[in-house]
Amino acid sequence: MDYNEGTFRRSNLTPEFEDDYISSMPENVITYILDRVPIQYAVRTCTLSSKWRFKWTLLSQLTFDRDFFLYLAKKGISKDFEKIVNRILLQHKGDVTKFSISLYSNSAAECISDWVMFLSRNKIKHLAIKNIVVSPCTLPTHLFSCVELKHLMLSNVSVSPMPRTFHGFPNLLSLVLIQVVFESCTYGELLTRCPLLEILNLSSDTTDNIKVFEFAKLENLRELCLPLCELGNRGMITSFDVLQHMSLFSKLQELRLDFLKCKVLVKSKERFQTLLPCIKALELYNLDFSCANMVSLAYALIMASRNARTLNISKMKQKMRMMWMIWMMRMMSVIWLI
Image (cartoon, rainbow, N blue to C red; front, side):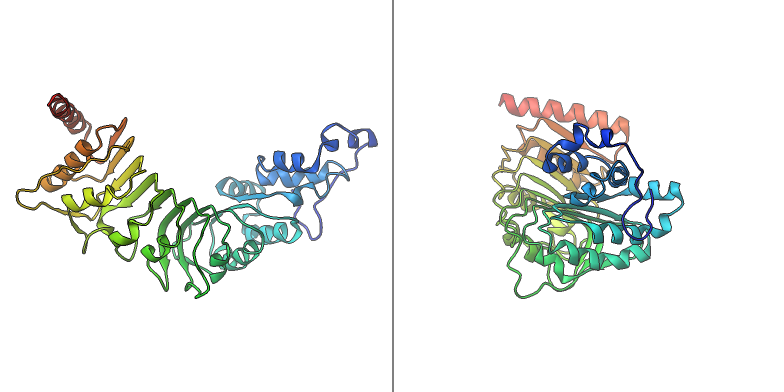
């Protein structure tokens, strides 16, 4: 793969080969096919013939992931990662609907601002930025100009202040935030501006608590992955509050809760009558089985999710897992008989 200045190197092929069936297909069909090929190989199609010289420049999906970085490392040019990305974007034509990138160096992280600025003018619908570098990189305010976004995934980044002209992401369906810091707003403020959100995944490294009234506006939420410590005050929350919060989402089908750094309180004579009838999959992470209150909350969640088909509980020994599951099955069978 040659990344010298100008267009990519191509070989001289016979005219008969240039007139093959694939080359005569409609341009949108060729682009559809190339979008499903790793970008390092899609770019190399420029060497096939004169007709293919610029086919790759119409790609609508650009993925610079771990496989792309390893490919460059194998070629001995991984140090030129950001230069290669810049050249590909410079020669690209048309809209970029999907852009996914993993940053493995500080120099690449420094370029992300220019890349987001480029994408904000290209009708981006699917954006994923995963920063592998220890220190978080800063995304520009141009991120809030990508109003056509449907899927957004950010990892280990800091987001510049939200402009006053920003009214939200009206088309956003899925949002994944892992170790993300917003300089001028809270997570909840952003969520209230995503009315169509169906999938929400937050990490346990957020910097602020999420208010109940902010969550309640996500009427279309189907999948939720959330650290419980973000719902409470200083990581403390009651079992009753958790069930009440989850019952706000009438369409919720998959629920994943992280108990890390969470302190569960149980009120005296607390009764659980809340049901989560739409839950089909329930996953509970980082449970501390030495904590009776935490076990009580897990039990209440399972009892409330009676229609669940999948149950996953992590962070416990296999023997304890089997004893817990046997006990829960017995308890559930007794309750259902009643």
